[in-house]
Length: 190
Ligand code: SF4
Image (tube, rainbow, N blue to C red; front, side, top):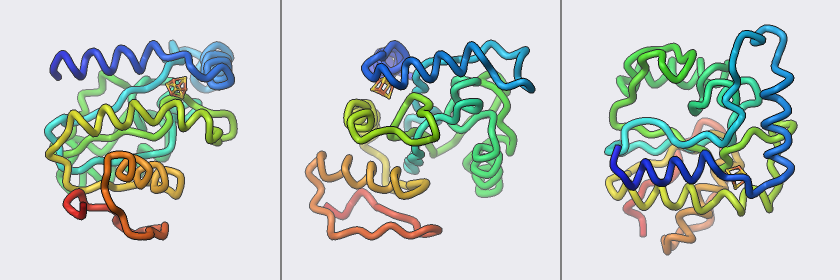
């Protein structure tokens, strides 16, 4: 990763712009789930992860309280990650199907995973204001990856956030309708 990525990731990790989310992510990290008592929870915002030269840009909602908020890496350590990394492994984007921790050896090729929100939200529901506050981080990742050709949005909120990202970047998108199991937005439609 370049200096620009380092700078961006440090900025993300240090962010405390949303008081409700800061309180929640840190409370979860202190209290922990019973099965994870031995873990030193991350408890901070989670930066994007993967191949910065990747053409596939995967966008999720936000870290899981006991998944990414515990491990510090996107989609790592919970069942949603098991599903995602299993699929990425089968399609050649991931070096292994399982993701346990930041140092489990997993690498991604031609693929980058990020989210519209970087902090675990209570009930998996960030507010509109919290997502607005987090939008610049997604935009900065996007600007560092001009080679991206496909966005894969995981869920409606990620889909809406991806469309917001593209519109803010000046893409003239047609009216988009979210649908499960539907591959979404290609970059060259501006
Ligand atoms: S959700 Fe985003 S903007 Fe809000 S505190 Fe976390 S990193 Fe900062």
